[in-house]
Image (cartoon, rainbow, N blue to C red):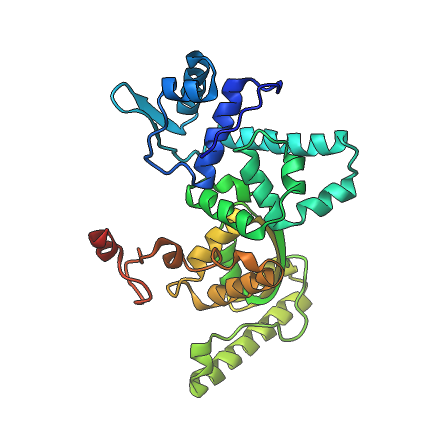
Length: 336
């Protein structure tokens, strides 16, 4: 990798050097475990003081991008950082992007329009962490889709997931069972607004979901529907007798249909897809998440490699019971 230093820039040279090396790691030009040039060699190549290079290497070591020792010198060895401190640091950097946009004369609507472009926004977040250039310039010059996808894949694969948390998506979900929504609301970092059984009173036969396994058995299906009818009658009897809906709802089953609006960031959606698209997931939530992903892929098809069962990303299955789609983890590790 060619390290470029602007000797007339107001940014200190050691910081420019730090940024260039981080950029090289993020883009894959510096490989994991690769030795960096010695302090003296790099200082001679850049025609700077050895103390400047040493200061840059010490900063990279403190930030967890490299390791150093007297025998082997500096070696690329980035580690994941999902701490709250790093998250706050990144949020501060992103707020700087917004502030710079305002200072440059960009109004709120234009800034929001820019942020709505998922690919360029994520690329800008990734590149900002590894570049001395301003976020606005990075975004404006982001035109090569293949280049953007390549960097995003490398950054995500390295465990730097916070870069995709800047994208927020919302889904309007309807005609799913309470059994399904009970599973869905267990996920963290998702905002839910669900149809209330306390404030929305059922009138007549309430809507309900029938599992396919029940639907395939005519005898059981008949009993299932009769049971739902009796529950509905009892519910109406209670509400007509003055029992409030918040108490009458106690008899409503998990099969009762519901609707909700769910908003979440892209990192959480990918996590949910990786888990819920697995054949081990309960069928209804698997179908629901599949439909959510399909809707998003209509607008952002480049996300297809990420919105998949986790085995597709891992290369192996780590479930106790394997469907056979991928080899088991033990077999995979034995081949490595």
